[in-house]
Length: 266
Image 1 (spheres, rainbow, N blue to C red):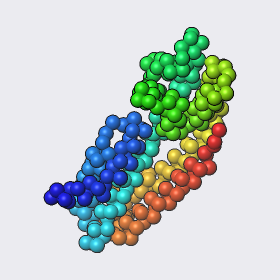
Image 2 (image 1 turned 60 degrees about the vertical axis):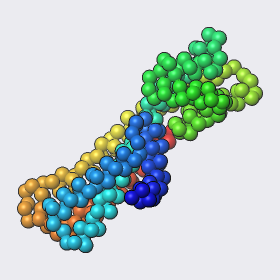
Image 3 (image 1 turned 180 degrees about the vertical axis):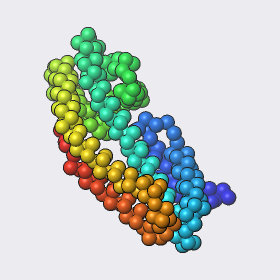
């Protein structure tokens, strides 16, 4: 039993570690092993429900479990990536205020490290935890510029990368650090203004995408409710299962194409 546990932990440890790193970047406090356990239990429950409700042939029932597990894994991965993007957006929105606070501290006579401490103490999440982590890394011997480079890798936004590189360059070549931070804050403010304009312009396309994506789902629900013969053909036959799978794949392709068309880099 011990050997099997060691082998299992060795097999699933890289996957659990990847979930742990993603959850850390998303600000979610949970262990990767626990997520994998919940995902496995949920997949088993969904598979058992599918077998009892649909009553598929044995071979189809066996093949359904890895498909359900894969869908669950993709769903968890998509949710984590959504949380990471959401946290990154909040970080970007708070970075302008953080730079202004740093510039104010430097103008008052504080050093760069002390200014980062002030930002970490006075700012909301996620700026607070990220900047305080930079301070903790400097406490164990890492240079402040290397710690900021790691922050730029954890929060991969253009503004944070520019900040880390600008501070390192300023330390090597000299210059007015207060003015640099203020100019960067103004640049971030201008970028946010442009992003809001782009979001307003593309709002119609986003709404159209939601409508187009929701129409097949609405039609399917109406068919299941109002047409018993069609409901039986869709839910209890192999051809119906493949039709549902094909529809889901086409919906995914359409959503991806719409997102690519509406994506604008600023």
